[in-house]
Image (cartoon, rainbow, N blue to C red; front, side, top):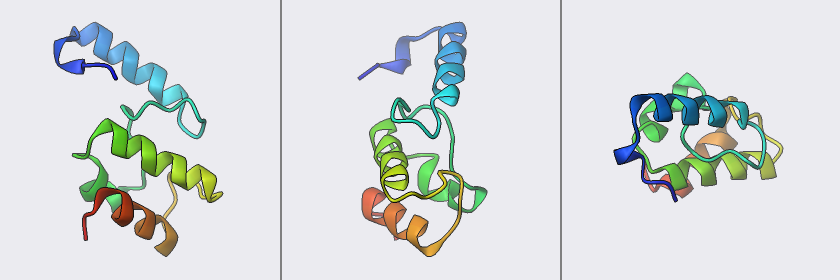
Length: 83
């Protein structure tokens, strides 16, 4: 895992840009925002690992990573343990 606390602003920006290009692929690292606006309160403050896990579960269940549905919400709640 990458400790982003010690990265420069330039390095952080490039890492976010790279991760943005990985959204909807198995290479997504958990840094970039991918979710629908509806789920912002669940996902913006969780760990990169939980974001990555939610993203992977969306892909595994053939869900659009930026979509909204009861299934999306159920996955988010299970992974984040936020209800």
